[in-house]
Length: 121
Image (cartoon, rainbow, N blue to C red; front, side):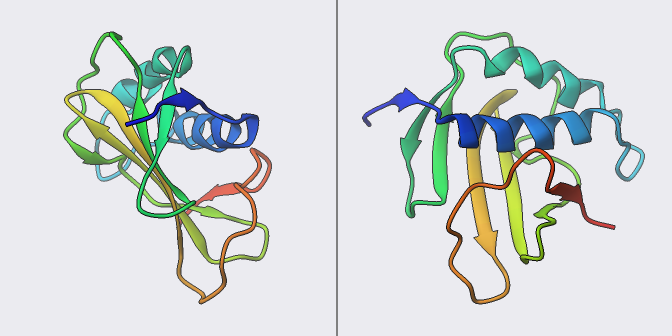
C-alpha cells in the first residue's frame, strides 16, 4: 500500500467528526475514547480505498484508545445540503478508515468542511 499525508480537506473532515464525537454521548457510550483519538491525528497517513472517497488510515505507533472496532458511534453528515454520510472507522483502538458515503445519488466533489459536518439526529 502506498501511504501519503492526508490532504488538509481530509484532515479537516476527520478532525471535525472526532471533535463532535468527543463531546456527545451516543447510546450511553463514554465519549472519552473518541476524544483520545485526537492524538492520533499527528502524523496520520492515508492510502486510497475502493473509491476516491474511501481512505485507509495509518496512525503509526500511537497509543490505542478504548473503543470497539468499527465505525465511531453516531452518524455524521455533510450539512451543506448534501446527503453524504461521513464514516470514521477504528481498528484495534486506532484510526483505520475515513469514508464519504453518498445516500442521495450524487457523487461527492469535495470533503466536507469543519463548518458543514453535522451529527445526525
